[in-house]
Amino acid sequence: MNMEEMINKYFRPGRLPHIWCPGCGNGVVSGCVVKAIAKLDLPKDDVAVISGIGCSSRASGYLDFNTVHSAHGRAIPFATGVKLADPKLNVIVLTGDGDATAIGGNHFIHACRRNIDLTVVVYNNSIYGMTGGQYSPMTPTGSKATTAPYGMIEPDFNLTELARAAGATFVARATTFHAQMLSDLIVKGIQHKGFSLIEAVSACPISFGRQNKMGGPAEMMMWQRDHAVPIAAWDKLPEEKKEGKFPIGVLYEVEGRKEYTEAYDELIAMAQGGK
Picture: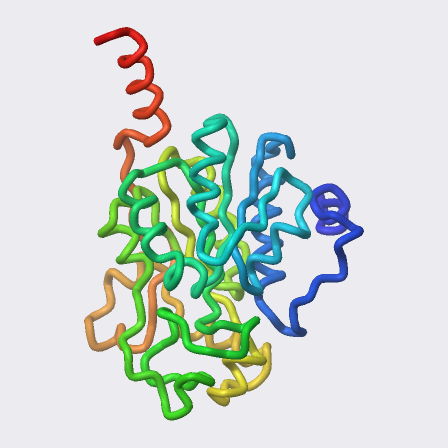
């Protein structure tokens, strides 16, 4: 299936064209999500896509699945409710770095801890793009934002390490430059039984790139190419060579841990059986 066929099948044509700025990586990430669903040949009625608020969260409105465009930071609680109501659904959360880690940070941590079977794709463009270019918890230290005109002094979250520490059982990262890898990781995240995080390193040329003099969209994608290191090579690098770079690929995966909806169903059966 080519991209035009996928657009006709999986997007809502009445909602297009989209609102994303020229050069924005959100379209690439959304395309990777659709390619993953197409590769798995999932029936559209078996997929639920939940999003919060922000540039990336507009993606759910463009996609022709069971979709919820929820409140700011609340995509994961909505998705948790959907998954508990119908555990057979493939529930995918599309959220941004601010939506997921600032107002939604507590929900993110506890969904990891519960190991509920959600596939969470975080569009990380390092900024609040929609609301004016404010810094997010994932804005790199030293970077400029409208709320950090002299540079960000706070340390930024390493979301993949946070997810692993909180209990996620599948953790991965790729970039919009590495689009095929990103789509393949989303496939693996959907297939994994438990909480899956896929961090999609993206570019916001308007709100982040301009403030930090990173050039245009092409230059920002070249930055991703030059700073991302496949995990197999990353593990062999000496510490001094890792400075300023980041690993991509499957960063952590563990099988066999009880998934939350299965544990919940067992609890219901035990309660109904009077044990």
